[in-house]
Length: 362
Image (cartoon, rainbow, N blue to C red; front, top):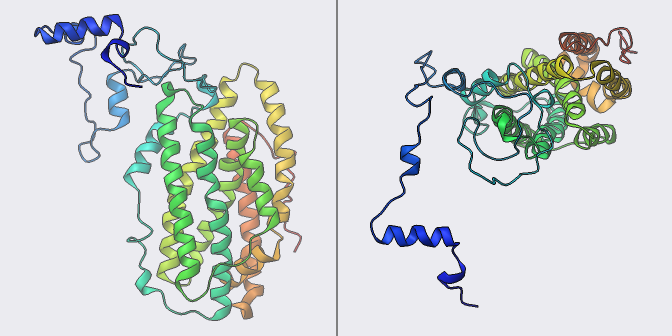
């Protein structure tokens, strides 16, 4: 069917077209008087450039607690009539916000790195087989789990009201971070004559729990506060005990990314509890979730495909695995303590009821 101009344009649009043909312009957008017109965003630090904080300080900076509309219109824009509803489900600030999300976004975009160019791959030398196998096993594990922190925010991003654009922007940087982590650990597994190793059923079950969490806050707690917190401690240990410059740089760069994700999740949990209309019920529900989730941590940290490769790497070889186990025991204690400290910071005291034993069973 041939479409003609008669059934393309509304009556008002056709009137405007006829006016344009006569050289007459509407100029309503030019005549609009805004009380904020002329206010300039002041750059606080010229070395950093114009940041989100600078722009927000000048205009439309603080999001409303519960925006009335669910549109794609930028916060502070003039809204036309009958804007379509985008169907967002996360329309209250406490459901997504964290007080540190704006500076975390700025840090994220400033510290992006390349898994291709910024790792000194040409300096990677052959390693003893036990150490190479251990590194490949841990790299396989990290390749397996890192992408969940891209999949999870992708699931929820489109459900967040555009009014909270800073959160959405930060989660986009997180998705890019995790894609890069998958890339760098997959490359490490394949770069030195080894290869991808074993994937574990228990790991996949936990990842599925994160991805299929019924609410954003529950999934965020499982991923940012619990899961990525544990991975962050693995990165710290890996960077400290790396066998060569390649691994040291991989763990160092991944660690700075992961620290941002954990920081957002912790402060989001804090904001959630502080602004929830029924704090006590929210705390009770999160405690129930944590009671179950924490029970999986001892199993994760007693799996031979995780514990033994870590011990080999930390001991400097299979002959020194006993020495490496001492380091693994220290990591257990550090993981537990830092997790409980994050919960405390968020106003979520788990010390009296945590399911993670204070000491490892080995």
